[in-house]
Length: 223
Image (cartoon, rainbow, N blue to C red; front, top):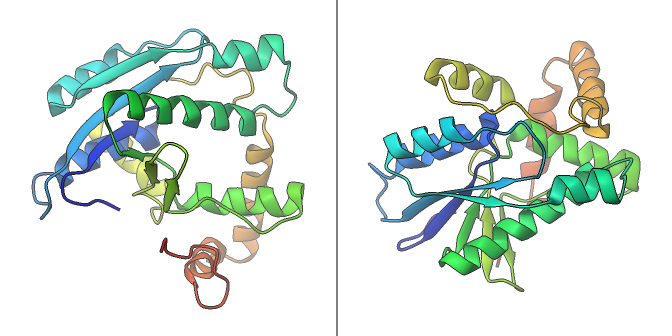
C-alpha cells in the first residue's frame, strides 16, 4: 500500500474512521522503513453544521498539513436532484473531488477510512440491490487520474475503531447528512447484526472469503 516517496492524502470526512486512519498513519511514519509524506483533505458538502476546527487542531498537533475544500455536493444531491438513495452518488462525487484535489496538490495516493464492516456491507449491498458479487478493494489504481486509492483499515473491525476513537478522544464531527441513519447501508448493517446473532463469527468468515484470492478472486492483488 505504501512505498518509498509516496505522497499520501487522507480523506478526512470528520468521522471516526478517517480520523483514526489519519492518527494511525502519522504514528506509522515514525517507524515505517520507507519515508512518505502525509496530508489531510476534508470536503465540506454544503450542509450545516460542519465545524472543522477540531480536526484542524488535531492536524496541527500531529504536524500534518490540512486542506479544507468547499463543495456543493450535498446541496446538489438533496436540493437539486432530490436523490432517494443518495449514498452511492455522494460517495462517487466525493471520491472524484478528492482525487482531483490529490492531482492538484501533487499527491499520488488517497487513503480512505473504510474498515472491515464497510467492505462486508458493500458486498451485501451489491448482492441484494444490484445482483452482483462486488465490493471495494484494499488497493485500487485509477488510470484516468494516476491516483491509487488505499484502505489501510480494511481488515479492522468497526468495534475497535469505536473504542480507539473514544480512548484517543478524536474530534469527530457529527454528520449533517439528512439521510444519516436511514439508508440501505443501515438496513444491511441490521441484517448482518441479525446474522451474527445466529452465527457469531459470520463477519470473520465473510472477510475470510474476501481474502480467498485463489477461489473467489474478489480482492485480487493489482498486477
